[in-house]
Every structure is written in structure tokens, then in C-alpha cells.
Length: 147
Image 1 (tube, helix red, strand yellow):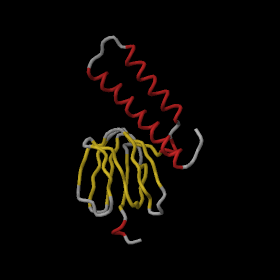
Image 2: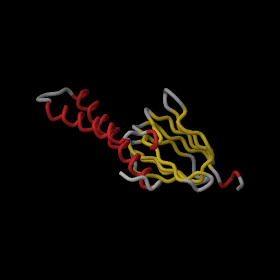
Image 3: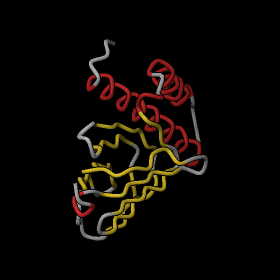
Image 4: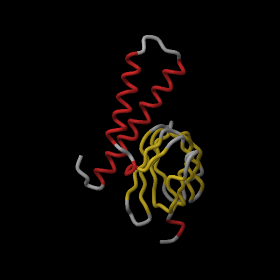
């Protein structure tokens, strides 16, 4: 397959490079909505919402990742995501992610009064854990792994 039919993709966090390889397509949750990026896409910079990133590798294998936010930069055949946090779906422990989400939701309910910063931080944790759970469930479904 020629390089003009592929995208050089990289997703990095402050801690590590999560994935770096040539892919066919990528779908990303942005503030403006979900976008799918194919080879020769127009240049773009967008803010990423917490959610699930899906991509199709060079060999047609699907890959699923969870992201808690960040930025995506699209050049002709190169996409770089700078993420606050990101995980490959197979690395996610669904039970831990759902427990963390429930704990954050319970903390929110238990609070009588809270400042805007605390409220925002708890909402960010909830969104991150929901994205982690969704990514892991999608990956399990794609791989036919029982619940």
C-alpha cells in the first residue's frame, strides 16, 4: 500500500507514547463533534473531548483507545494527538474504571456545597472513567471477549 493511502499516527501523553504507527483511518471525539480522518485530510487543529478513539490499522485491524481530553493536529497524512491521558482499550480494567466512576458520582451526590473547581474536577473524572469503560467494552466486543 502506498504511503499516500496511509496516515502516520501518534498519540502521546505527558507520561508516554501510547501508540505510533501507520493507519488507514481514525475517528476522534472533538468539541465540535466526532470526526473521522482519512488520508489526505485537510489540515485541522481541534480540542478533544473525553471519549473513545477508534482507528483502522494498515492491516485493517481495529484499535480502540480511551482519551480524557487534549488536542488533535491533522496535517496531510499525519495526525498527532496530545492527550491529557490515553489508554489502549486492552489495558483498561473495566471493573476498576466503573468503580472509579461510581465513586466520583457518589462524591458529587454527597457534597452539599462545592466550588466550581471541585465540581469541574469531579465531572472530569466521571467523563474520563466513562470513556475508559466504553473503550474497553467496544474492544471486547470487537475481539469477541465475553463480559
